[in-house]
Image (cartoon, rainbow, N blue to C red; front, side, top):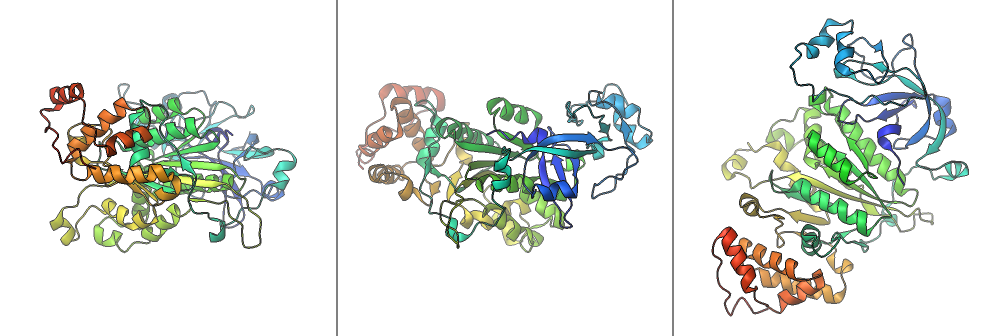
Length: 490
């Protein structure tokens, strides 16, 4: 079910009971705020994370803004189709036109997120640093994709009890077809389950985003019942476009960042709202996959909000617990609650994470980059771990998955007994090989076998690499060692 978060926004119910809808900027600009009258919010039991579809109207200039941070810029009426550069030149505030000086200046980073459909309402285009549209929700048609009586019958939001969490047992196959090498390699390295908390970690350029794309593609094909949410932080324009073109039915949200004039709290607010929205869907019995690119971006915003810009302060920050609580939201909620009954649903989270081998001297002096501390804080909360190899990345050998370092905590529950035994034997078989030889062996087997079960059988039987494949490898990457008697043993 497509919720269209980009157009409808997400409800944020504040501590004082007031409610607003935050509509995320398409390219990561500040969220547009839509006021929700308290009586309307109470009538429909709106809570944080709900997605509301309804009619809105513009708020006149005389009415105060509901923004929690007072705007430092003047607003002015323009239609939503007007270009940002033209609007800036018409602004009354001289400080707001500083970005438009010079015709040759690159305008690629300017926010262009004004929606074209506001039920006839006139938009209010603010300056770049506070780009949102002042409007009010006047009627509700659907909530979380529900309408009519289903809206009244939907469950109240609640914290999922431990008794509702089932052991992870439902596998999500990522390989789409025989020639999907990345998907098949991920399935072999660390089988993903519904309700898992998974991480993909490695250095920059090792294929972090590529691995998440493979996860999304595999789930789209093999588990169409799963709703896909994609949360992007500090993404480049071409990355946003690529995600949207590949997954037009996914809910893609780009968090505002410092580059967009947003504070760390505003970045975290949007990330928390997307997580809350995913939770609301699980309460309706739906299965959700939340992909985060990247978890390091969330961690960085948490540290920035505390001013923890060094390793020593990061190691004592509140962000450590806050990050653990964030990833602990994943789970398969098919069990019964304390009072019986089950809402069902599941939330699977898979996020990328920047990591690289630490410098021993810097670590001893507590001078590591604070972003590198994230892995050790959340590692024990994860059930699926994909490790990307720096060595393979340096040699441009993709997918550079280190199959021996990667693993899934619940693989015995996910695989058949035969596949589990074959996988264990195959991993043991690969232990004695250097990482480049493992890559050579696996890519050849992926190229010559129709599925992973056949690949595992071939690998455990010690089949030698084909002569033509070895010649092709040597021509590309240099000579490879010849197989020995020990290499062919299980």
